[in-house]
Picture: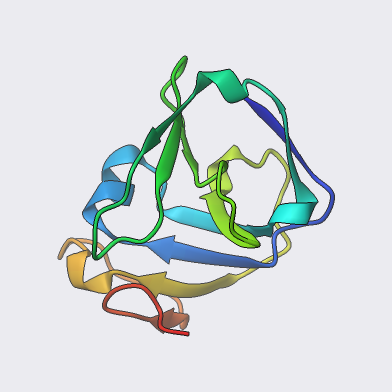
Length: 121
C-alpha cells in the first residue's frame, strides 16, 4: 500500500488502548482527507470495525500485516499510523488517549494532555 501526503499531518497523538498497542500502531498522525491520497494497494487493505468505546476502525495491509490507522475513512480528518510516514514529522506529541488502558510498566514522559478514553470535543 502506498499513499501520498500533500502536507504534513496537523497533529500527533499516542493511543494506549489495548488494540493499538497489540498491533504496534500507538503513534497516530492526524491528516486531512484532502491532503491524503492512496496511490496503490487499496485492494490489499483489510478493515477491522471498531466497537465502543473505540470510534475509529483500523485498517491493515493484508500482504505484510502493517497497521495503517484509518486510511479508508470518509471523515474530513483521520488518524494514520505515524510509523507509515517515511519522513520526519515536524510535530511534538499533543495528547495521550486511553491512558486508562496503559500498562503499568509504561511511563508517559512528556507533558502532553492525557485522556482516560477518546478526547472529547
